[in-house]
Length: 476
Image 1: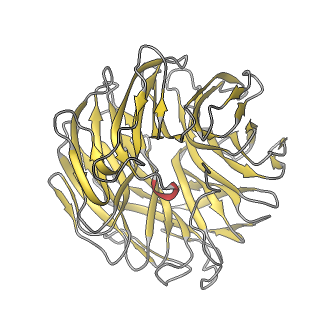
Image 2: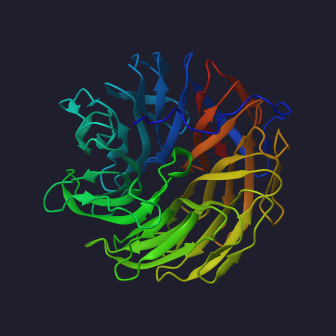
């Protein structure tokens, strides 16, 4: 099966033209880096190491691409890049992960003990990192997990899992014991190796036998499987499969996403016959057995969990995503907006909802990234058309005010109680979308893609091809 392209929103040019970067008074653009070639590129994820460096992961297509001191080689089709940037925006190193077909990195995480970098994604045909022996895929699309050395980006290990059907890894976290937790989607059978049993898709009585299922696998620091399980059925639609995973102080696992059909909670299966429903679940770090779960959805509207982070000091869970209709997460209700809106909610370690807020307005709002900084403030990223209203004094006005129009990228910072601290937009005549956010020294990093050109505060960059990578440092 195919893997899709760069991702994002697609669509025509349209729009009202760039309005320039908008910002609250508390934040400004410190630097803006753009990388591209004559084709399509996108940063898809970003993480911050203990020294405040940014690790950026993404994809590039068809042609070589300059990234700092290195020219990344021509990909056969779509390859992934990983780069390490200093807090001043200099590229320390960049590298590629290649394949014999399309290949895409979807997420990155940092080992809290030694700073190692773990990236996950999907590939076709073969996987080649230079340091590892090339891995031949099993057919269809297979998922990969690659661990990199922090100082050079050299591969520590490379793992691939799958069969002739479709498998893809979408999110990754590394816990305090250096175990690696990966979640994604699969069809067919996926075998992570002993002592885990192979996971096989079960025909769904509601949506039929073509359903894909959500997997969670826990690997040790060397990439060997410790535990694996399926969580039930999910929509295998590229724009909607942004599962999120995080770990808490006890090394238990928190996962959010969306499900269709049957959600496989032991003894208490949940059924959804309509559009995708949001879920948030806590799993035992030792056994992956669910200890609690929350869901939200109705018969006519789609709701999606996309990103998640855990406050290490209190184990408070922060989850974000997008929704239509009323969102009901435990004891917290967030009323419907006018179209597709974003949300952020806080849940305690026992599964009791603390607060939730809608981020929306006229037009569509997509929340794609969520992270916590050292003060447990919440960093958000995504894209919006029309108006992005944070509900307590923070409002951004998009370059295109029409619903369904072109998107501006946004980055925002909320306090631990959800209060708006600042928000910032990067604009242009076409599409801009933040796909990842992470804390930076005295600010935040954001990464994503843009078309035509991008303006962030007083900074700007032209696009070399169809889509280019941007990495933005904000100072607050």
